[in-house]
Length: 424
Image (cartoon, rainbow, N blue to C red; front, side, top):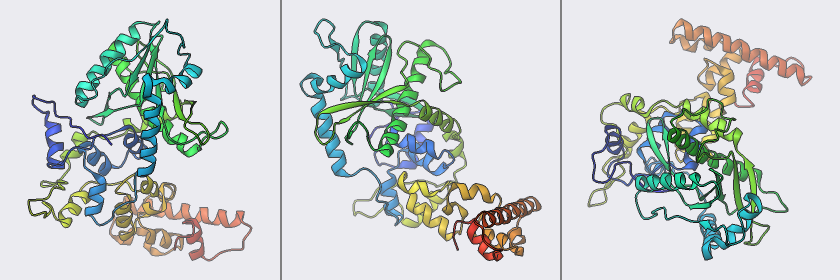
């Protein structure tokens, strides 16, 4: 993950950036990337992840301090393999990379139409690199006959009031449009690759396409099209088919797979648009909330585990079992859901079916027809009515399931267990 800052060099910082820096403390900012944005878009209702990602907090280090470290992230061997594969593709003036680009995009092989590779100022900060990328992309799109390769460009994308800097592996610009090129180290065996890995790469590439769409629309002075399946053919706008470049079979020779990301793009747009603005989330935080992971000169942490736990719990989370594979705090949130007996631990599908029933105990009691379905008498009448309706739906669904399975009348306790997927 890239380390960057949203504070411009030599200039004043915006109030939002200052507030986020206060939450993070003196630690370097972990910038949002396409992988984290794709995971965030998959769970837009999680305010906890939105705040932590916007502040650039190291969630892996935070999870370790909370006592729930997660075996999360790419394998170091996979990262090293990917870096080696990409360096081979880009050696000798991108000689190996040009082979799949010629096969799929029509990049000319003769010297009469050279491939332009402008300098994108890779040693500069993300804001400077993003400005340079926008300039190079505009120049390349202005010449429809030229072929231009933007190596590791830097893109901007506004997410819930915060700016994310994104870095695709490459962009190929020709005919006034551009194509996202992603280099992955997983192999393509006999013309096919692991569907799960291709799907993850497609969701990541869709974030790049969305950032390019916003940039092209802003440069043209037009709003982004309301229909995510419609391509706005503007100068510098991206194609919705991206190119994944992977090793062929078990060697290092590259091959390419064209992937249509319109469905992933539509999902990403819809989910990111549902996210609450970061400013509104920060206003709801109690005074003294921060996620400072720094230590003093003696190595003692600036914030105790209890203080960090209180700060984390001050931001509402939307846990589901999917978080275990997409978020570093997934194991912490699962432990809290289990301690509180919340139905979120059973998955989004079950949570949606149970309606006003918020705990597993209430759901089991409701399915058994017990008086506990009224939330223990501590809720208002609206919640009680909602719990009663959810209990009726739960018992009815269990009865239908039993009838469909051809079983005899089951006891109410068994019906409740069936409706909850066997959870006792």
